[in-house]
Length: 510
Image 1 (cartoon, helix red, strand yellow):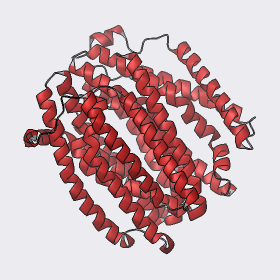
Image 2: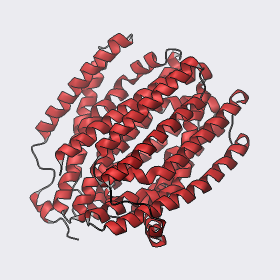
Image 3: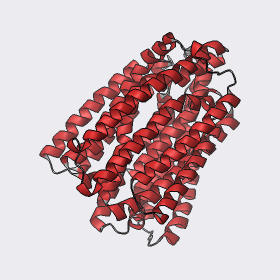
Image 4: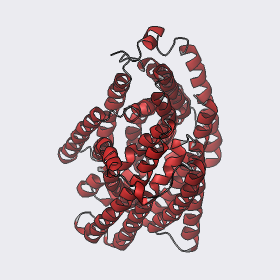
């Protein structure tokens, strides 16, 4: 395993995430205070609707990097180039179809959603720009594969960081010089997306010179292979929508636009955490694909256990910190909110973040279903949980007073079941090793985080954070203390091997 490259990938991906987080922290209170909670909620909803559209595109794009990477490692450059050209052509056709669907939806959206009259035109413009941004991403997404194929995710992280800076500067200038409009966010996002598209095209020529566009290389067979494999990832994306993607729509229709806005605000930090997990979780996948393609199963299991450890070390402390000290942050971040609103936002935030602990510990090994191209079972499990989530949430909203707490809590509980019970067992199954192979590492890190939670809870009783000047250095110090505690606990608990010699010898056996 190229440890240096993994560290570079981790570093620049982390920087990209921090910049994205800072952007969201700036946007949320500005929109909420100036335009109301509902306005912020519709910004989040526009992105949710794009995720619905992306489910169709996932049929091809979700597994394309995996197929191209394997062909490249096996030096089948002609085949890899066929996948590349075929994906570009297919995505362009899909972009036209989705553009028509998006335009039709915007034309009729007043009859589908509850939209305050004062926000009607702004919401429509926001949705149009958000769909346009996705169309650009879809057409140019094939060029982003170059950093994955060459395991240079550090370059992708660096460019993403630049794009976030561009986006942030445009939003700040527009907000301060022109006025606060929700659709300025979507406009700035389009500019940053164009920047990424241009740099991706240039990087593809530099990193993967074997790729060249020639329409003669378009192969319906390649599209069929991607579709047959990717359909399962698309259905998996559908299950994700059923779990959380419909939250804004359900809230909008059953509880109103303002409640949707409160939910959107409460989702800001959990969504940032989820983004961090999903972003960092895939940096190990190129190495997994390489080891799998080379038939190095023992090394692959070691790499998987290492990835679990790294994810826990990097993200465990901030997740626990937010759950314990979140109310202090929200009071400073949203000073115009009442005490009751702050309390509700904190509870919703914690409910949505509970699943992040288990997601963090298993997301890297969940990628093994893609690595081994065994996607059917995870898809059906996710789809089943997604339907169960919708049914339970609707029933609880209709027949109880739980309201937003039902929306936030039910999916989190179901996610925990998925992450803790299914992911580790299925990862072991696809690698043909013992079912408990990954539970040693997972259990050790859960214990560390539980102990850290207790320590942080005790500290919180003696901490008074009245302003940013006190909050920032205090949280920085507590964060450093948290990392020291986690490192020490891992050393104490890490004397036992992640899995026994006998288990490693059984790798590959049925």
